[in-house]
Length: 149
Image 1: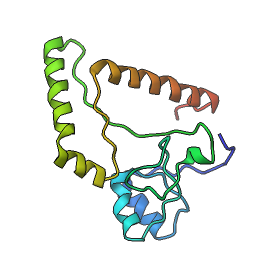
Image 2 (image 1 turned 180 degrees about the horizontal axis):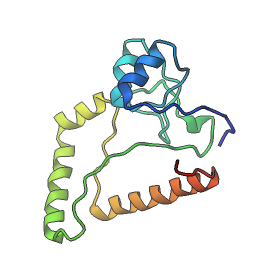
Image 3 (image 1 turned 180 degrees about the vertical axis):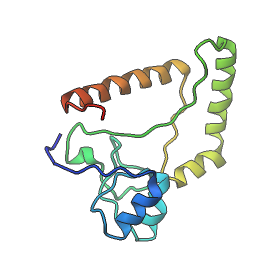
């Protein structure tokens, strides 16, 4: 969206990448909140921006990229799925119990401490999120002419 040319350096996880950015071997790293928030809090890592559409409640002084690149949003998310032929009543029960756990103040607070925002939803809403994200990133891949190696 900005035309910035960056070299992608693949890592096998956050540990090596965070060691290299803290050690000065790389200049920028897109990290997950859980992996980097303690380094940010300790002053060992400087957060430049969050990639979610809005600022993170865990890092309220860190701007969102969208504040200076309108329309930018690249949020990571996690969800729980079940096999396609799982009976509807079982999916409903699982969804109800998972949403209840996510509403638990202790769990919600721990996830917030790790920099995550909880979005409990229905199976239909989660399916729509997956479809929307697939379409969004498909456009990015096609627009950048990205090909598998």
